[in-house]
Image (cartoon, rainbow, N blue to C red; front, top):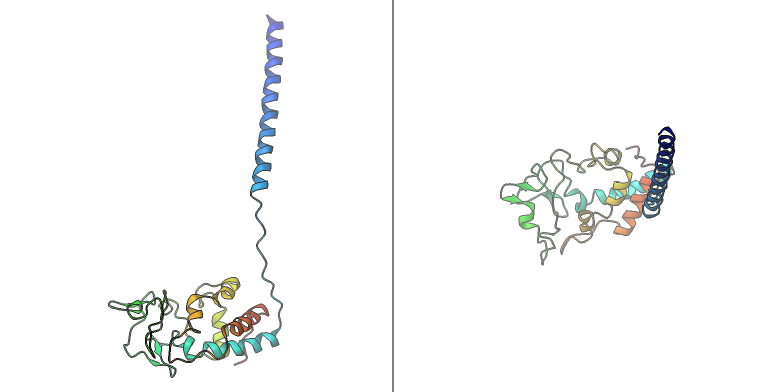
Amino acid sequence: MTGRFLKFTKGHAGALRMVAVMGVIGSLVILMAFTLHHDPKPAATLVVVKDSVASVAAFKKVYKVLMSPRCMNCHPSGDIPLQGDDSHLHTMAPRRGADGKGVYAMKCANCHQPTNTAGKHTPPGNPDWHLPPANMKMIFQGRSAHQLAKQLINPKQNGNKDLKKLLEHADDGLVLSGWNPGEGRTLPPLSHAEFKKQWTIWLKTGAYAPAK
């Protein structure tokens, strides 16, 4: 009886070891398969090479675009958007609203359609026409180059944007609409391609602010 029990025990232990070995092999196979099919590539690192002279020079060009009516009119110091090449208060006196899209019946999208309305000085269009929201107004009007540069790189004032998002913002739909403003409106002082180039230089050389 004892001999049979020892034989059974040894056999049982061997079987358990075999099961354990097979389990380890199975786990390794699954892990290898997962690795082969899920090989995440490391995120590209945004390289910043600090150069205060190049950075400030680039921002001075960027600043001219940001202060043009095509940009500043949607970044007013108050809650009424600006209008026209002379940046006067919007004739209809719409209000910003909490989300930047107007209040009550005076919603931006009521007049600003997804595309420009035909004709001179008719409402320009964009599917997401709006001012910045009330809790982060992102004011351009009245800002010096120094003040605006500091504001643009501060996530608490720029819409929670890091460097990557700031770089991407040059191709935002509303930004691009500044170069398609509809008939009767002047374009920004730089082409979009040149603006994006200077914007990128400014950010990738340290995002320095001019002295004033």
